[in-house]
Length: 536
Image 1 (cartoon, rainbow, N blue to C red):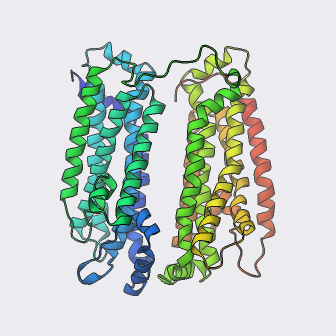
Image 2: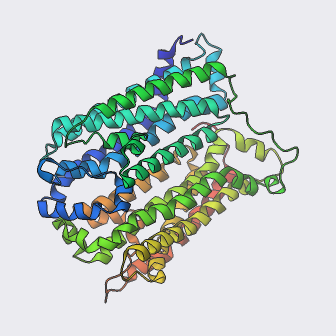
Image 3: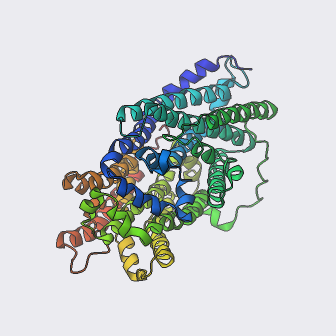
């Protein structure tokens, strides 16, 4: 049943030799980097107490988790770090494990790779066993790396034992989501459904934790992996029992996944796919309609997610003055102006809003690399029409996502501010980033046209934009680093009283969509003239 599972595990690491280091670098840099920067951000007890007052409202508890105080009722650096980072870092670990398990189980099965593996002297459960073994190794390595990295930070109240507990919490949560995803991969008939179920589970347990914490219901919150890791009270009491509960749950879920895998036929899910229609719907008979069918679920998810996130971040606007005054670096960064802090939040959300734009466009490349586009092009469809469908939905997202951000921030200002912003102010502040998104979209089309194996560079460039603006704002990095991305040329709105948009920024807002359109045209030409490339 498990013959040659270790050999297959080596193959998984061979295939993910680039992906896993990127995950390591991104997650570790965020977690360890914030731990190193936190002592300089909030270096006074008074500033931390101000943050504590802000965090005690129900909205922030729902976002971050329950607040635990150190001995004597102090809100220490360790307690603050645990509150800010524990749940959100665990969400990052959940994402990594969902992608890892789906890629090497359900997706490989759909692409016919497991059939090739099964033709060799391997056991029926060898591939699933290899995938979960790889997940154990990856999460254990993450736990050790994060624990040692945070331990070396050596900040006040951030002890080495607490750092190792933080790392263990990340590894344990990752294993739970790896095992749960393995179950959904047995239930589902295709990788898209498996991923959808896994992310729905993630959202459900997050909301379960939020509901339990807001109501003070410990039993309800502890039904969620995120609620359990909050009960570790990292850097405060350092409770290890939630880690053992999570590890035990991962073992139970893994056993269930093996049992389900042994009971089903290869290529099928335990929940059978719905019978297809005898004739396709009229809109599916065009490449654009097919693109909508492929993007519909993720499009709807992003349409719901973006205003919710914007409202969550916008909930800070009611206490923005106290938040700025809580730390010297925030006073220095914003000049004491709340408008600049709000503009900074809109910048970060706008960069996040570019992710679906790139996702919708690179879906065209994914269809090509897996051989699906070949079936479309074998019929009466041109190369332009096949690519155009995905481009139009990505272009729509570059306008719609900033508007959804606008709605979220405006709704938050109505809820938490005595004098809320006018809709037009928030509208201008959010929609001004649409030209930068169009530039990013054009660059992605250009990569698809001429460098199809390098389309992931668009995500790397977007990641650079995020870090240059985020760290540049917090750590006073040179301004030219931010100017290397299109988002660095966008004016940060709302402007303080008496300030005006610079002429160079106006020119940039005009040039970015023009350059994006030029790259799009070149990309379409390159896509039409090149051969199809099937390998990633």
